[in-house]
Every structure is written in structure tokens, then in C-alpha cells.
Length: 129
Image (cartoon, rainbow, N blue to C red; front, side, top):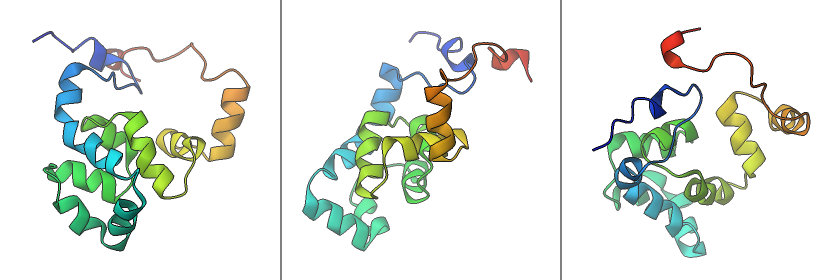
């Protein structure tokens, strides 16, 4: 297996690799199930019971239950699949991205309109802050 340490050294970024794809397969399949209204209804009626129907790790289930999208990504979730989860909650991509960056949706949108994050600054976890 390839050494992913260089990819994991990028601050604020989780690179979606084949290894992470395998780890998150069932998490992403759960998210895809939310495309069907009856599944969304069942999920929202009893989230834990619905999640328990899927072969997810406890960490994956907790990431979903707490809507911690960064944790879900760390557990193999793909943002495009996770979009099904936040959309089922009536949240936009902007809402989710804001929560993932610790910003309000409005502040996140303004940052992006202003050109995104600066390229200056912290570029390696090994460098520290």
C-alpha cells in the first residue's frame, strides 16, 4: 500500500484515496440511501435505529448522529455522498462547508467570493503552528 503520510500532512485537507473509499464504503452507501424519501423518513424518525441497520463503525455512526462532517470525512465519507445527509436535513452545501470550517454560512460565502483562503501560511502539519 502506498505511503499516504504526505497526503495526510496537508492542514485542513483530507484527500479521498482508494483506502479511504474502502473504509467509507458503507457510510457512503448509507448516505446514498437518503435519496429515497421513505428512507429519509425512516432515518429521521429514529436515526440510531436506521444507522444500526448498516455495517458502520461506531465512529461513523457518531459522526452522522452529531453531523460532524469533518469526522465523517476522516471515517471515509466522501463529501458528495455526505451531501445527501445534509440535504436531508434541509442544509445547503454552503451551510455544511461553513460548519466544517468553523464559519457561519454567510462568512464562508463571503470568503469564497473574496477569492477563498489565502495561500500564505501553514502548509504542513509537521511544521506546526
